[in-house]
Length: 170
View (spheres, rainbow, N blue to C red):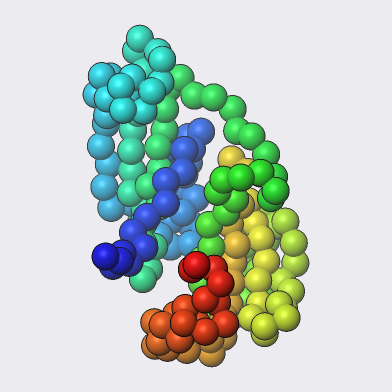
């Protein structure tokens, strides 16, 4: 058994409409679905202990097929800063072309830039930004490796699993 593909990541947001606007205005990613969770689901499934708790759920489609599932709860709790060494999710990543143009675009949009574009030891370029709630978003330009990973990634996984990365599977 193995997974077919990456589907989505869930992010709780402080303001549903602002999140929809952010993803559309900044990245061109549209809202493709919305639902309201009933109170019993907010309390039972999500474990929010509030007598009149609400949850609006939206699906933001990223080019390539992945989705960011946004949750807006009332009542809501405040955000916590990301600590890289804390166990758990740290960021999401978007693949782009033209890293410096993207940096300029995000600066012009008023997005908080965490770090300037830098080249990794393996040759790709990246930088980090934050959304309005402080969630980290990595912006990566893989260059030619985007295509190499797309076409040869499965083969590389097969080979490395049996060779140099075997110890991680034992």
